[in-house]
Image (tube, rainbow, N blue to C red; front, side, top):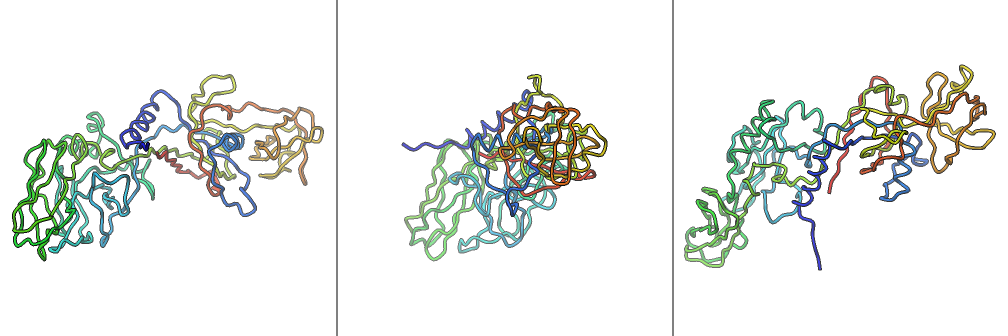
Amino acid sequence: MTAILTDNLKRELLDRLLTSTDSDKYYIGIGRSEPWNDSDIATTPINCLSDVRGFRTSMQAVKVAQDVTFCVPRTNWASGTTYAAYDDTVAGHTTPTFFVFTDENNVYACIERGRSALGATKASTVKPSGQATTAFQTADGYTWKFLYTITTAVSTKFLSSNFVPVEWVDSDEAAANVGSALQRAVQTAATAGEVLSIPVTAGGSGYTSAPTVTIKGNGTGATATATIASGAVVKIEMSTRGAGYGFADVAITGGAGSGATARAVIGNIGGFGFNPVDDLKSKALMFNIKPDGFENEDFIVGQDFRQIGIIQNPLDYSGAAYVGSTGGTLKKLVLSTTGEAGTFTLDQTFTGNATSNQGIVDYIDSDTIFYHQNTTTGFGSFDSDTTITAPGASGTISQHIDSADVNFMSGKVLVLDNRSAITRDTNQTEDIKVIIQI
């Protein structure tokens, strides 16, 4: 027996995760200063406890992910591209897809492709524009539906080279800015049960005149016109889309021919445009943070990181829920003599001469060494008044601080992403976007 997870279930699960951000805390953590291998090419993470532990133990800092939204793959409109039309028989996103993002930050969905008199699909040559609440046709024959515009504030948080944000707008959000008000107008103007298009499934033969197209179902008002070429039906174009259709059949009669068949494409419940998250078949959430320099002295600079993860509900070292906006996760060694820490270098492995325990240097601040340990170094502790050494470096431990802001072994790691090295600078702000896709 074969079963599938429907898009409705996937969006329901993601929507619950999105809603839970009101009560649960989600942090994005960065870490792993040491290279992946001799060529420092990122490895593919494995969905296993060992890889998750590796991320935890090399983590440097976390920042709360307050900005979360649904998103879809980004496709910039480009002249000469043949776009797909929305189709209720197609799963996921096709290539090319049926929706586009324009240089005016507008998102449009293709309802019907442009076709020649012979029914051949044409490339899109006229960029869709405007923010009308109803579908419109451009001069190249494509029928588009404006769904929403991405405001500057939303673009700053979520727009990337690969994804565009998408959300459903409520009345409060619509009152807050013009962009949301435009989308709300589209949502409220959506007509439930429209027949969006009628693809021809078989052209038939022997037609000497355009046959009659009749749309039968539980709705009313949908009409369409057929075009013939060489005795076959080559395309059917909507005249009116009607309303109230939950199902529909298409009958093609007359015209002296036979064998032509077609099917009706119907949008989501509520009407196409009512909820662009459904219309664009989103199955992904984007979390975003922008660490700025030291970030409350929790993030280190002058160092690189290679891993990014999402952690749900981490704890502090007392066992209480961590609630800070940012938090450090590295252990610290305070050395007893000024200048000793400066003899060590970043990413250097040091050893405690009395115990042979090891650690990796992440950051040096005055007389303090920030470090982490992994399975290679082991996880032994360092006692006060003992000496640590590395090639060309040594120092005596005055104080060992094992408890950072966040207990890196706490919370649920939901996402783990391995990347090439990214170096942080004092005057640098990273734009870190993490996608959860089902």
